[in-house]
Length: 150
Image (cartoon, rainbow, N blue to C red; front, side, top):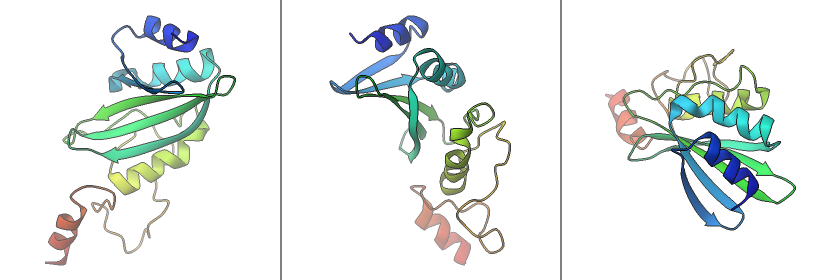
């Protein structure tokens, strides 16, 4: 077992770990632990945040925080799920500026709310003619778009 993986499992005993290959690990955590887990990988394990991604899955909205352990070339991905009826995950941008724009993008494209974000305003779509409840990367986008045309 990798050192950082062992430390993470010790700190977060209920974590689900999936090893995609020897240099790619997925760590599923409850959304209530996202800040603690992100800080742990970045500050205590010295990992670099590569990017965050958001996905609309059948189970809910999944936010993935991809961290690189540069000395080993291993990518650790935190997977956090927010239910469709409460698409909300605590913002990391308040203490981690690298999350600022990507949280804004996920909010705008998927409708995920990031409570605590210092400036959750539109980044990619027009703020004058884009309807606020339309999220182009959602699975139901086409149905919602048809509804708006009526």
